[in-house]
Picture 1 (cartoon, rainbow, N blue to C red):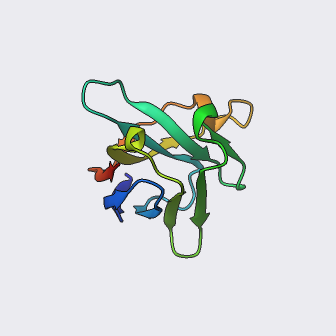
Picture 2 (picture 1 turned 180 degrees about the vertical axis):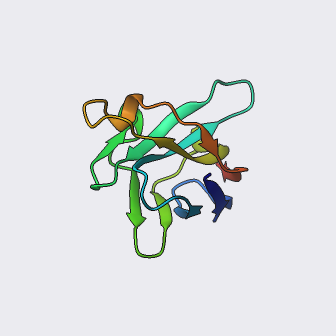
Picture 3 (picture 1 turned 135 degrees about the vertical axis):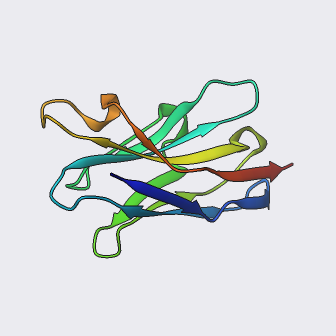
Length: 125
């Protein structure tokens, strides 16, 4: 069983920054991929960034250079640093986890089955 609790969302002006956090409770003997996703009203959910247990990361192409995913394994916290925010970044952001059954399959294509409740990010122009 995995439990995920996001925090750090809020309202920010365009050009500003936010850091989202996700407190993770999981089985330490199971390997998981971790990720951030977002969904804006009327849009499909999209993958923002993912990270594996070794720290390898993958980002949505359009967000590279502005967003950074990281994790503190000692504290079991997943982060998403978001810089140079714009109105198109307004969305509900979700932390997610998916069991990694094979090292061959990258976290970018892993199935994410555990989800947090989400944290709202609103960017005003």
